[in-house]
Image (tube, rainbow, N blue to C red; front, side, top):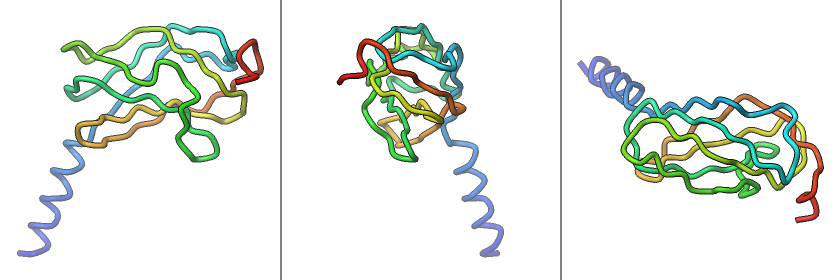
Length: 116
């Protein structure tokens, strides 16, 4: 009986986990340039926090850092990277329940804002 209850809890937790998908991230992206990307939340959310994951650590090397889905599940807007590196990922965090998802890895190369 305990195994069934545990499996049910794990299954419900898996089903409720937020999933974000990312479209339009260029590879490579140039630091300081704005790119229009689309982020889709596969579960309703009001807003999400954006981070650039560098060497496994989330950093605020991206603008805007907070995106608002405005009652929909899709956000499209400008994103600007302020860090040059390889194998970085864009991370979306749902501040309401802490759900996290990362984009595929991509590279950012130096540009006008690399001095920040």
